[in-house]
Image 1 (cartoon, rainbow, N blue to C red):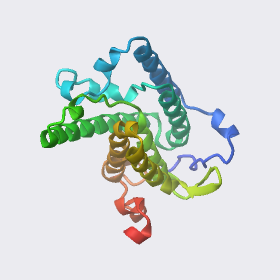
Image 2: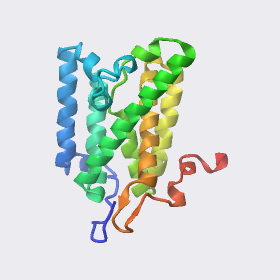
Image 3: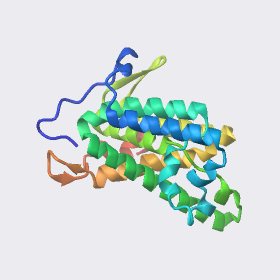
Length: 238
């Protein structure tokens, strides 16, 4: 969401040096929250019951729809979430502003949890398998994948160096989704992350496509063809 006096879009850093400065206060504050919540669930494992999204217990613990996104139960998950938040927020906050970025994170986190909850309930009634009711869903991946969609929208043609590959930012969400789907086929633990990640992408696209207020046009959403749902897929399958 940019006004006429907004600074030009920042480019994705070509080297790692640019990644270690210029983090925003909002993202640093959220990173501290992620770290604190991780330490809490490590010191008091039973806290997961009250903070993570467990569909069968969500009705009495409705705050889980918000807190689950900030619960990283593993050290690698916590590290990835903090690094991703700092890097993606560094790119998006100058363009959206702190208020809009906060709003985006809140909406994507809450709507992702709500979608995961409803999907788990539906799957339970279809299959009668209680695993859908009592698997703890948590993690910041829904928001991270949503931030990737924001980068796709604002900086679509910026290139990232991924080891030996160069890939444009607009394809990063699709690549992450593909890797996650394939990973869930071969690695069972990926299954609990997959719905959070995919719903995070979809709900962020819904918000950016139809609801985000754009100051430069006084309109809502981004109706451009470059940001249509089909833009997440290669041309040969559209």
